[in-house]
Image: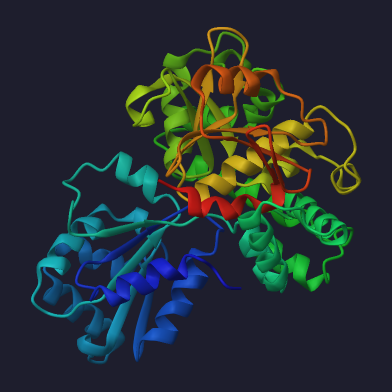
Length: 437
């Protein structure tokens, strides 16, 4: 399956590969498969080591940081010499070895042409708790995410539909009704399947029959995430807190005011008790936090209130799996209250895959804008609607107060531009890449 992350890998190769490449992302998003394919297709030789399983290789980094000694140790264990000039080394699950991460500095500084790629499912957590000096400036950091809706369309062979969506976005005129309905149906299928490659592969194997799609695949990924909470935490008490926060997110999203409230985790919960658990989940890349801004000024990041935020899952398929939302309720577009939360989580996930910061605005009253975008056209408000009912007092309040060039409304309605509001179908969010400032 084609991944847009391949562009980052190709850029690293074109740069000369003098710095090791570190890929950070959640478990089961396809890191290992994609990196193996990249190594296989771009180098004469590649060596793969899983530091969680290849304990003999892992132990090398406990004895020395010198690249020549490490490579010599690998050669001895492989019982053959390595052609450094034409070989790329791929080290996986590197979160288990802090010494390995430290050694990257020495690989970067060596005058030999080492080509090092590394990845880990909980690297963000590891780096947050790194006891040694991280090799700042000696490593190329790239973040990888679940497959976006555009990648989902690419995987199922809908490239011409993608081109049609982009064309109508650029001209802001309506898609033909049949294509609009087709794109909406595929969007709803994506809400169920989500962006995990294994889930999308099963959907492909079912020839796009959503009824036959095996939803247990996503459930097993959730179970794997919870298992990691027990495996890669300091102690049992910490893992229990992390799991409680993770499973409380649907309750947070079910509220009309989606501001994260610690009291929904458990009775008498507090920031002091659960803040580190929330930090762990953010660092693991399995949740997304959207922060409130106190002022609509460039740069927005300067005015964020880190104590006021909303939390989403990093994959909308996981949200629907945890909540046991029925397939028919999604596909038939049943009118139920939580549908708005699902759409908002989907938008957050799509923005994250495009490296768009998640920021929202709330007035001193009740007005709230789901997301704010910093674009080449200034700061643009974004409202998310899950249905055809698009009336919004909040967007009107914002438009009157800040006079943006235009606003954006995501919904199931077709493309259009009226009264200063761009109507963009939920399936076309990937088109906003051209707006990034």
